[in-house]
Amino acid sequence: MQGLWLENNQLRHRTDLPLPQPHVDEALVRVRQAGICNTDLELIKGYYPYTGILGHEFVGQVEQGPAHLQGKRVVGEINAACGNCDYCRRHLSTHCEQRSVLGIVNRHGAFAEYLTLPVENLHPVPDHLPDQVVTFTEPLAAALEIQEQIAITPSHQVLVVGDGKLGQLVAQTLALTGCQLFVVGRHAEKLANLSARKIATGFEPDLQAQLRSFDIAVECTGNPQGFDLARKALRPRGTLVLKSTYAEHLTIDAAAIVVDELTVLGSRCGPFAKALDLLDQSAVDVTSLIQTTFPLSQGIQAFEVAQQRGTQKVLLSMND
Image 1 (cartoon, rainbow, N blue to C red):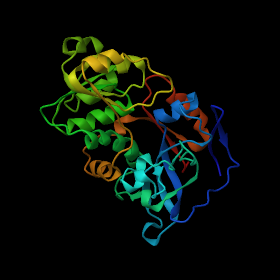
Image 2: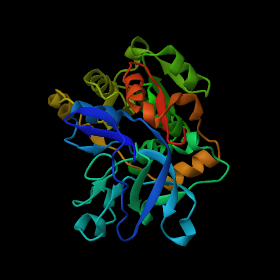
Image 3: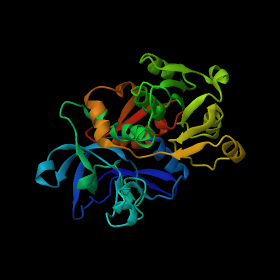
């Protein structure tokens, strides 16, 4: 089996990988397409000491599993939980102390011809949606997690910092709430994509007059400058939502957080069923976020493109 193998912060294309064997209550999935995420790029930089096959955004086809899923196209939630610990019993399986995480923690990922996941993690996808659309289910679900954590209404003033892949999805999902939304970024063409959807956008200088006025700020850049800008934009007792993973440590002005009594909220995995519903309804646009597609055999080149500043979503196709 071929796949992209990460070891000692070095990524290699291998053709000698063993076919994964599903455990009890798991399915064997033939990967059809997968997306390169910023988390994958951060793992290469050392965000987490992972060795194995990268990748967690995917759509595939079940080859071994229960009869109702045989041959079906599926997407999969990335956290495989034990089901028995305190977190699992409290329905917080994404924080299971024994969990493995697809392509991130103790479980080989989606940048290969096959993967395994628990059957309960798999979601069939609508037949009419193309692979390139449903590949966005995992990051779209992550964007929707914000609304699972915070009740956002039309009266809220909300800022999204970052116009990259994640920022675009977060902005589109937040816009559906009717909130007073503003997105600040650095790339005119990316902001234009949001402006076309009637979302207010601008650059950092455009935000200066609005500092200390937002109820909620969502940081989607993964860099210290974005964090600092999001914090400064909040009114006292505002909420700072962190959607990015950081390979490097942040220097935080803790005094400002205390004085303004800010709430800092981490946010990651989210509801797959709701994400699939939005894709099924064409309520969000993901195809405009696709930069290019490479075959798996050219995965190293794909990562080189994905690492370039300003690049949108790079996909890997296992069918080429």
